[in-house]
Image (tube, rainbow, N blue to C red; front, side, top):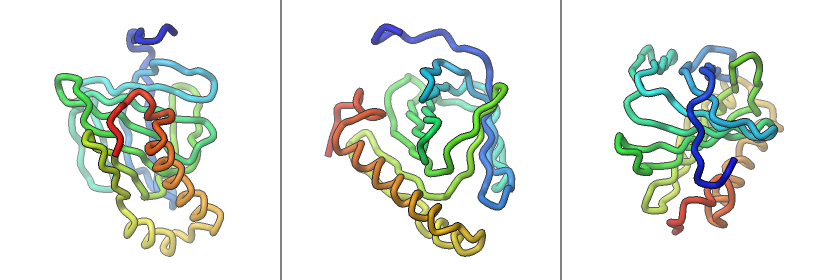
Length: 172
């Protein structure tokens, strides 16, 4: 695909997010925009329904987001925009590498998140939830290490301006 070319939305997929104990956490529809073999680019359809099952809520998607999932990485990255398609933030979820099959992408959420704002601030979120769930659900040491390593990888990629953050030019 040529740089700067944005494809029309592709087929409708479903995102399924679970917690480590297997509980359904979040579901939402997404359009597949591109699959280069190692990374999938998906986009939220405006008006689609987000179901946040662990909070017992659902809502219509009113702001666009592009979402990037790598088949072998312990994180995914959402690029969130406002209603006018102006960049708002990156929201990076730490989780097990995704499973991809038959129009569905699913992953296990490991609680830790990294949010990067338009002014360049980066915040690590939900460390308390991670600490609680690693005990409650018995995260193995290897999972805990990989989750913390994913946070460090995301921060290093942000600081260096590497993909998936290369196109965004505001750095701390």
